[in-house]
Image (tube, rainbow, N blue to C red; front, side, top):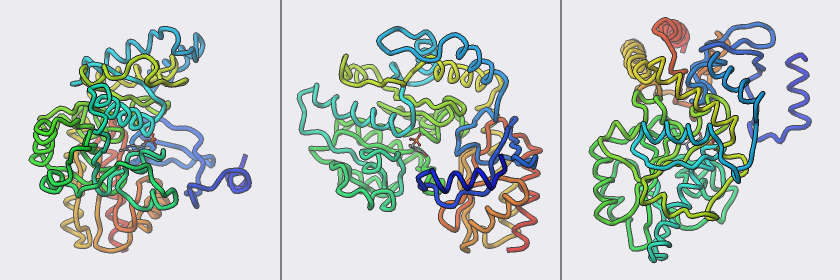
Length: 398
Ligand SMILES: Cc1ncc(COP(=O)(O)O)c(C=O)c1O
């Protein structure tokens, strides 16, 4: 089928929530590269928005999916599931958590985290604690509770009245948080690095302060690592940058390497609040999704992708800093590991993103002055050199 026919079908039959999509339909991918229907090659510096962490169609991931699909795709959570137990073990043994629950997406993992925080206090006979404090400019998902948790009007306005009991405070402002915590607060929920609003970093001092404040007030700390987890920031989990541990944290995006799966992880004393019947999922933790995620975890460890993310991230920022010296309209480079944002003082991000696309490079834009890059964790120096050389040419025209 030609691209035009795909677009025609999309316009006629698909509910248009994604606006005018970039006019391309990819046919296959390998590592950091994608090829479209016409055979044009692209360098994917967006990786499905932080999903294709191990690159496209990694043979180990493909084989794991194939092998599991031939054996058993789905069975109910009424029965024990081998790959689910094994994946839970891998995640727990490599994190600060004691227990895991699997979902199908990031929003759903966050819903679970919100429910767990609330039920934790209900079971402690403190039902008055149900409010959750989140940050301005945060993004936690598209369900009704997670858009209420999200600190961005544009996602919320069409759906008011919002699910109640979510309060917002500015990022890196400990006093604001201290003043907002009240007797109804049950948890603080934070993206350690905000992704969707333009790669905004929390400081170590702030995060340590948040942990201390949560301990003093006896409330829970939830980290949304849906985007920043699993090596993306140069640590396996982004809480490791701050020398603190959350009580609950969530994962999704990279976990299945493209196969939908999310996870909610918690310390024992918190996880215990979920008892039989309190939470559930038909598809969450199914054999196929967990086999895919087990393969992803194996690739992350065996190919040292966390270390690569740290090293390549530093190299990437170094190369971008050279561009910033040359082009004064590059206002700021923000990032950790391979979660990188480039902010301009001019409203040119969409134009620059489109020009990158024309040259065969996929990057993201946020608003009209931020470019976001989230390449696979397998990215090499050569890939980064190619991208920055191409960017140099484009920026010289701006
Ligand atoms: C930090 C964060 N939380 C939650 C979500 C929602 O995840 P999903 O789209 O899988 O529901 C996203 C998606 O971009 C995200 O970046």
